[in-house]
Length: 158
Image (cartoon, rainbow, N blue to C red):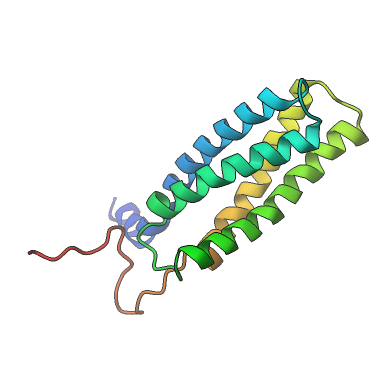
């Protein structure tokens, strides 16, 4: 039992970040699919609907990640975090667009079920990319080597 506890204590911050990132991602997922299905196929084409829905979900997930999932990390400020977040999400959307366009245009599967399944696969692959890159480039953690990273900011006893 102490081995499990030791591993948990060693990876506590990572476990909490991944869990919170997952919750924020789930909210973004619901937002994206909701907007996307409201737009396609009634109002817009598959790629346009995907891009608009992704943009809306990106705003939602930026707020959630910055102010909840990674709030304990000391980034380089809202502006730089925002720009890097958007740049990495542009890469993430190309992952999704590639998969969705392959299914819709390459395989000629234009119904909503294959469209949504392709979107889900794209979101899954893009999510792995975003988790790694957000932790490494956007929401930075630079604690001193002898001080463990904290999940919550310290408060003074005033």
